[in-house]
Image (cartoon, rainbow, N blue to C red; front, side, top):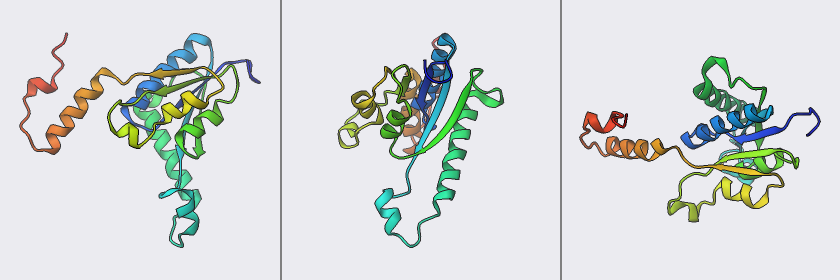
Length: 177
């Protein structure tokens, strides 16, 4: 099982609710298998590689990489607080599109790639997902984690707030217990 003798559980992290759900599932898989967690945040220059190379006013790549590392640390902090994931882990900041970065990182046959399945809305036709790319190109098992059931409720609540619609406190409360 790889160079370290541990199975690697690779997970994409963006800070979105879906990626945090996948991150928690990946930790569970690493714990269950005695594996190591690799939390990957992919980044690209604003406007993409071509635009960055042609612009005289693009921020330095070192600054962009540092910003990506700070986003990864913030996402890990949101997910686990100061205690961390309680499994051996590495945080990786990889330059490239999310799908390609994840597939290139999870490059061993015994890796497990954990991805957030994302939404299933009409926008996915226009903007192909990293999850779809991973499912089509990965050379290791892929675990697609569905969105949290709370995600649709959160989106609905945010929409009502942005439209300045009145809120009923009972809508925001968890009365399913």
